[in-house]
Length: 115
Image 1: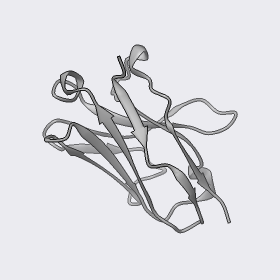
Image 2: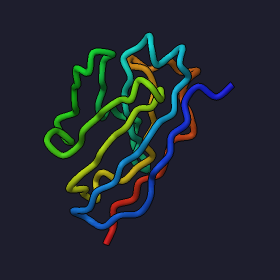
Image 3: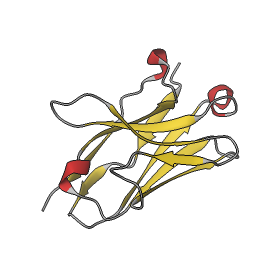
Image 4: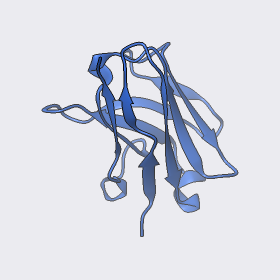
């Protein structure tokens, strides 16, 4: 049973914007802090942003002021709005609980920032 399903990735030029989404099972969405993570080629997966059930957010320093995490509780969906994208934002973006539960990793969605 799929617990997380990411979507919305693509190719965008530097300075551009993109929004990725994650459909989450209701059981998980209503019980855990939700987070976004990313993995660049040749690097370890890293934390990007998180949001609590009360919409308290937290960001990695590298994305602060450019990315915004949000949630739609009616749709059990997590979003990450990414603005002013840079080449170093390239990677596969995943959603999971935070701290992450290994069994819940999905396939992710590829974001490529390139001119």
